[in-house]
Length: 218
Image 1 (cartoon, helix red, strand yellow):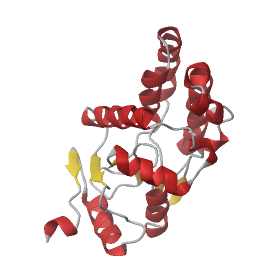
Image 2 (tube, one colour; image 1 turned 135 degrees about the horizontal axis):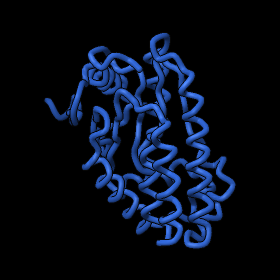
Image 3 (spheres, one colour; image 1 turned 120 degrees about the horizontal axis):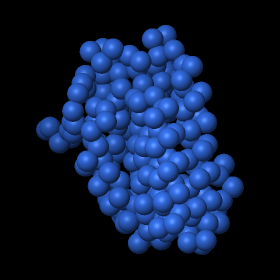
Image 4 (cartoon, one colour; image 1 turned 120 degrees about the vertical axis):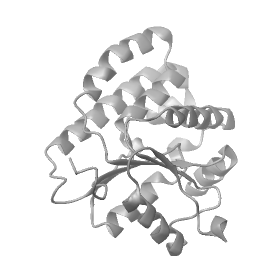
């Protein structure tokens, strides 16, 4: 694990569906010459069925995500963060967001016996970037990328997911946190905003911080 007094070596980019976390994680990895650890939700064999019948397939989809994320995290245990930085597009602990949204009481009871056992064996990041956006913006971004598995996502479900993410990160204190509202920012298209974000990423230490875009400072 990196010295907390130095620049963050293990960075996680998080946020709700469609907010752009993977795109930003890829940009950061390239800019910082870091290794990437990215998740592909479409690899989950239950995800398409979950989006069409959430009640029926919630538990299967949830367990697959949990165990697959844990497998990826175990690979990171052997990674030398002193030699190379790492950027990921998911935080292991956020798995609970969807569990509490979609599982019934019996399923959740079983999940709550398993998840903490796995989380204790996961390396914590040096910094988490939480990307926020309004639900209307998320809907537009999801529609523009036109993934087959996301065609059935409704506005009400995205509202619930967005609210759950905001609640989770409002109470999050496990690592340094940088909150970034992306409603009016496109880090892919506007390099000056991206470079400004990199400066703040490298400077963040303990506690929760809020990114102020260049446009907001004018």
